Length: 90
Image (cartoon, rainbow, N blue to C red; front, side, top):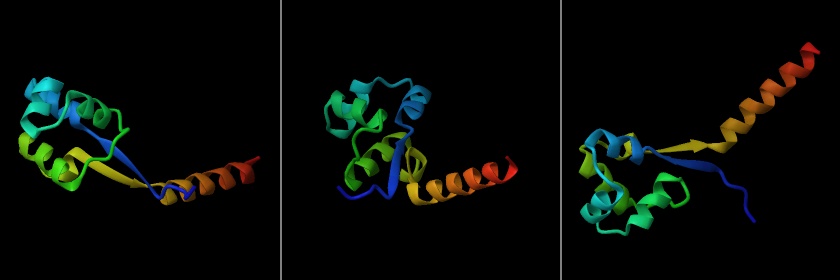
């Protein structure tokens, strides 16, 4: 199985709370099931570009505000550097 290169994170729950919107209300506005919204909020489902756009549009923000993609390679390199620094101090 190929190694993942990035991690996907969603802030949907934050924007929903600010708008006082339920998962079902958001799901209805973007045309998906409540279960899809739940999976998105738990970072277990990657939305299509169109769905990501529609969700961001409901909240009146850019896609980048709602969804972030973090490089796992950069994180691993940083952890490796911190680990080697810790070993040098010992």
